Length: 377
Image (cartoon, rainbow, N blue to C red; front, side):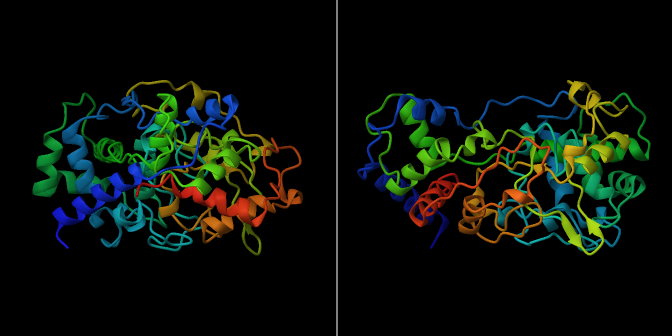
């Protein structure tokens, strides 16, 4: 089927869904409506990153896109950013744990909607998108690159050099580290363009906001029941809050942190230590401005051990497997995990937001149906 015919078929399918009778929303309580409306509107307004002089610059995004798919950034010339973040897999790699130059300990998170995050990575070891873009390039087990290797590409490769010269003028000297930071900021400018598309949930939410009686037209009845569980008895919105369906912080969700005998993943507490030791933060010389107070006042606490960032649920049906180490293969298994969670595995001194939901089989299926409406059709 041609591209034009596929687009026409998709448009007709969306129209049919809108014309189909949907579940009634009249029985939604005022509190349920208020909670649903808090998950939008989408997409959020554009706000440049004050710490990245290249944020929002089209020339920088063009350079960043070229670098994103460039394997010569790696030590062996075979690993690129796209190795672990593939466009056709919602900018993940579909693996349980990613593989760069060596096997990794964690699952590759999606890059969709990364531009609005305060902390990047499962452990928040980066406080900006540009720093998070530089870290894997320099990490020995991931890409194993060096500032010198990055600088040489920008200076010597004809295409990359031309793209680099098109960037806004810079005040700092173009030494190897400065050029590597330029590359990272261009990579961030490209990733800022990766915004998830609107979904069936967004149509429902905006219809409710506008007071339309047909707000639920084409929205599955089981998904609406799941949505009511999500914002109601499940209290899922406590962590998966706002339009991005994440509060962006770190929680203990009862997932083990042992990697193998004698080795653990410390999660957030290790991320804070790495962040404070890095020269590439909002407190460092390479930052271009913006609010550095969250980083300045960051303090590691014992309760941060084994905590991992709460991911966005937008596009969640396309990003299996799940959790920081990819141990849960399906959405059904994720919902079952929260339904039957073992509270003995949760921190004694943590926030303890997670409780076993004790959902019936039908309720679990409804919640999965709702989660699927957060992924574009």
